[in-house]
Image (cartoon, rainbow, N blue to C red; front, side, top):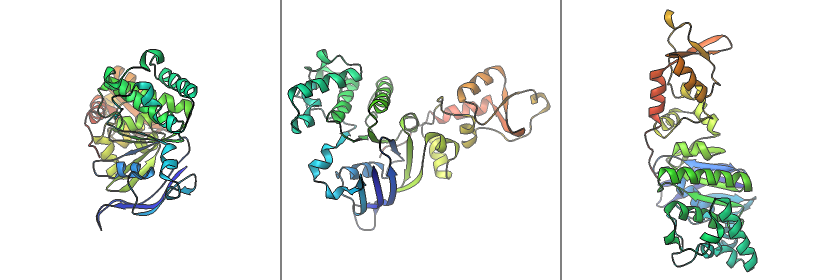
Length: 324
């Protein structure tokens, strides 16, 4: 669907922001770009719809170089959601959502039905919201409308540039759930930039971790948590919002070194047994009954997890990463 072939971007000679980037984003995939400040993730996103021109290499959409599309043809098929909501303040919610459909000459009936469908999909009553102005909505509601506006003309691709980072935790959680649900329903290709590792793990089908314009690792949330490719990825996980979710397992703690390989003491030999595949939820239940658990796989002792190990794992999710 989207392919980067040896793509680089430099704003000044010899100082690339993105270097020799080659990757492929599959059709219908929720693909997350994440990394510390200056890693090139936002630049990578903006090159897709030519908001930022690449310096060398090729980006293809459906095997066609993006430079071969007219700018209107390209952008009409790509929705875009910013951190700054950027709704038109003097236009109603309906008028904001239908900006691109109107340019594409949709009928009034089509546009009205589309607004009803979209507002309903995120739990907003269409008749009471369609005629309001943005100033009459909360920040979370405005950002919902921003997401809907990006989807209104039924684009194949949606780009999201840290869309929830300015929201309060409750609004952020609700919007994450809305976007995840919408993605399941419509299966659009979503490219999503964030600095929040917890958000990346929650939303992404695959995650691309970047550093200084290079890709460090691409994989599913489980692949990255359980098998970090190098020390940078491991440290980024430890310092960047890795939180307890049902998708995480004992192997997640092991990958982050929150366990001990020291032998069991005599009084610990009756400790409850878990495996690398035991979920974190089940681990929590085990640690409410026993001060330690032992990790055994194929009759082989791999180590143990104590209350202190688990608290260290939780504390690693409190620290925040930077922005790009």
